[in-house]
Image (tube, rainbow over all chains, first blue to last red; front, top):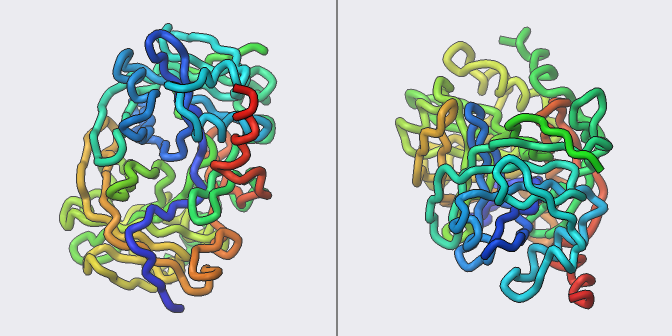
Length: 192
Length: 192
């Protein structure tokens, strides 16, 4: 098999796509972010990479809090819109008809229509070049009651989007289950 | 709609699942990591969260380089295995029959069978609690020639795994395309 060099590219598939929320001058604003991940387990932390000139960046620094809202596939249009326009020019909450609520932190805006909502307090901000990597400690998370089964989040009800950043720039649905994690690999234990 | 508090949980779906590689005492070792994301665009950077006692962590600190290898769905057993055993006890490369190659950095081991390989130089290591968040600058990336279409990575040939960490702990395939990003949201522009 031949390996073809692609240059220095972040070719990771798929990425979660989330709506990062912050109050900017006391008004809720949201930005679609694919450069988002888990940063730590104990305490639970999430990282989001935000371009310096983004309006949301201003709000995060004003309050040192932010939210992470996971859209379902029926919110794909609103999610994409929140990535291509700036909150400095339009009121995204109004255009997208987001219903906003606040939780434990009081100033990290949460979107009712999103099946999952997470409130974060900023723990670190790293200036890495084009983006700030904002690392937040999760203070509370919420699931819509119609997306639970037996009291736990149910992925078949949540219906999250999986983003393929490049080169195709497409949102995918989750496909079929391939295997159970922390389980299927046990089969190789006999080969050691 | 009611929102049910879940406690401080990192409920992000789906996560990419990658094999992070490092030479430990000059021998290649790999760890399955779902807490992996894009950290910056210019220069391109990737973050991986690695639990402190992990054998791979030792190798990353020895060389200050690491690799990110994206497995395809036919490698699900090997991928899962690399998350549940330690390189301090078994030779994962041998058990998984990984064919190793080196690229630009010379000491970040890459897996030939993975359709995508990325070489990183460590830029920052943040101790966040249970995990170190290792942020690397991408030096080079590679795609297997049989996963390209028109010279670009083709997601339908790569067949990546999407990980749902909790509560179901399952690897999924990518499903159908829901919409084009940076595009479907344009429809809302008329509503401003």
